[in-house]
Amino acid sequence: MRSACTHVGGRSPSYCLTDQISLYQLTLKEFYFWLFGKKLFTFRVCPSTKFYFNGYNNQYDNAPIFTIDDGSQPPVVLAAKERNIIAATFTNFLLKNIGGSETFQDKQAFFNHEIRQLHLRRAHDKLQIKVNRYKLLQSSYKATKHFDISDWCRNFEILFTGEEGLDWGGLRREWFELLCTELFDPNCSGLFRRFAEDDSQGLVHPNSKRPPTLKLKYYEFAGKIVGKCLYESALGGSYKQLVKAKFSRSFLAQLIGLRVHYKYFETDDPELYKTKIRYIEENDVSDMELTFSEEEYSESGQLLRVIDLVPNGSKISVTNKNKLWYLDLLAEHRLSTCIKDELENFLHGLNELIPDNLLSIFDENELELLMCGTGNYSITDFKLHHSICGTSPAFGKVLDWFWTIVASFTEEHMARLLQFTTGCSQLPPGGFSELNPKFQITAAPTYNTLPTAHTCFNQLCLPDYDSIEKFHKALMIAINEGSQGFGMV
Figure 1 (cartoon, rainbow, N blue to C red):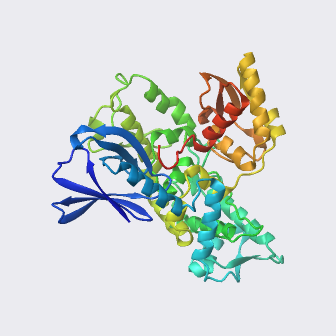
Figure 2: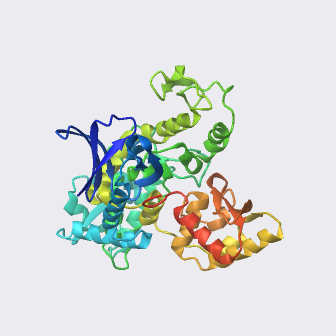
Figure 3: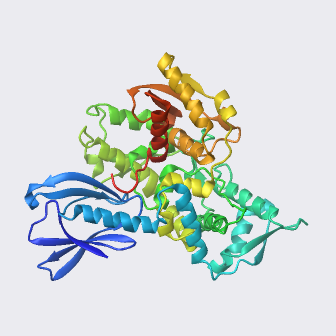
């Protein structure tokens, strides 16, 4: 454990505050005359916790200033002469927590090893489960509802009622795939939904307005199924059990303890982002008569109630100064608060097999790759089904380089490119031809900068570059760290 004396902005110098760093958490404590300690903040030692260096503060003997933001609570600004030591110690513990490397492949290998070690003493012998193909969700839940952790670690052998097939692995894979469809496809059980009902490609999110027959226990069951898939894949060998689902970014973020913000609307609810969120972000809101409240309507368009986003929010006007706070509160309400019970039950089931400290070594994009895999991508299909916006000779040169670089991509690189541009690593069943909007490659009016993307339009914007080497490096940085940084910034 490492300790260092620090100061929090706005507090009296008569107080001493210490940073204590252990393997799993960084704790900020306040001491008065070194006698009585009070815990102020605790941050997770995981990749989502960022250090930002902010210069120096004359109030505390010109001590270096830095901000800690773990993605789940408000950032904290600190002053400490030992800033560099604290940051270096944190990074050292962080690397130990994720297996010593920041690459997804190495973190995945570390995750799999830790899961095997965690359940090492639990047998993986066969356990027969009898289910009804025509009542798959209900019969599967009933067959497993009394299972303990040891049972969930056993090798399921599936028997479909009224069928004579023997399970040598094929029936188990079929059961997982059919059950994931039943759990996560909005057209099936209704446990999950898309924000736009007419968007067949939209990402899925827990449905707080599900049918009353679907109790919260089904979310716990869904979490156990995802945990079982991760456990089976961690055992090694050729067998990998992937989760057939396209989860919303904000849901994945909350699974690893991150707070939601309005930027998640761009991937999760593109229509709302295009029609409301981006307009508020980019324009003067003085005449919009917005308040810190949300109106809830019935399907017939009748106003049901007004929900305050803050106490007395319906009486507080949204201004140009506080509009981003309003958008974050709106995101918190729509993407998080509304599904609080569903999320808690899902996590309860998932964490029975997979501890949250192991999930938190990934960001939300990596978590999707871990759970859902990368899929199969065809460069030929990609070249046949995309659109171009830009006609200059310089852009033509960059476009030629782009196809050269993409031709060398691994499946993980392609998944990252899709996540960066469309918000999801997986393509529709028909491949690039079924992407809506079509994958668009656009010329950006910049030079030697990082590529950018607009996920609500499936649009990748490419600047001009001096060389293919510089372009390759910039593209890899963008797709790997475009939405999440690592360690210290």
